Length: 190
Image (tube, rainbow, N blue to C red; front, side, top):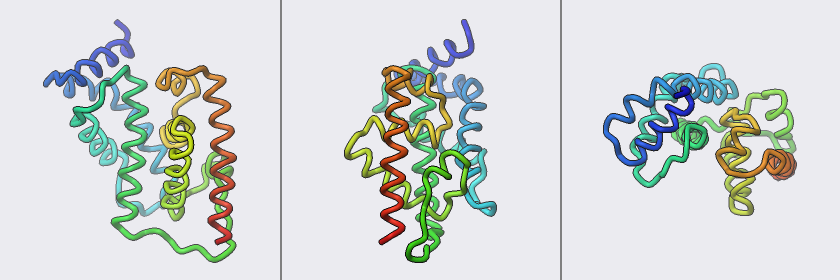
């Protein structure tokens, strides 16, 4: 059995409340979760108090404690992990009151954030709000952004998790980037 298939079997066992599954799963998904966490934290300020290891562990605890989720496979688990990590960072930023005030007219560029890796620490609240609005209009497109941008997942992985074609993922990704760019630009004006 391949490592990915083994992880999928364990993820499914965890969703059936197998008490040993969580302990067997962590070694199989830790590197992927660590990569996700590092990607998130790379966009944060240099003096961020949350470290990648702590983010992974907090997300993992939240994930394996969920009883309402029926895990499909390893990719589904990692996709939900991306959402959980995003929420942990947003909650952390809100608790710490670190949202930096912007000057009127200052532009927030999602294109640069997505394509160049611009640090978005001061704009995490704005991006989260815009992504929440997008989810209200089209939940799938918001999930694509979450998995691609925050989770660092490849188009193929997102397609597998959402059970849609790779072309649909690419189209959703392009649409969502344009929509979020417009929303963030309007936020900068107001």
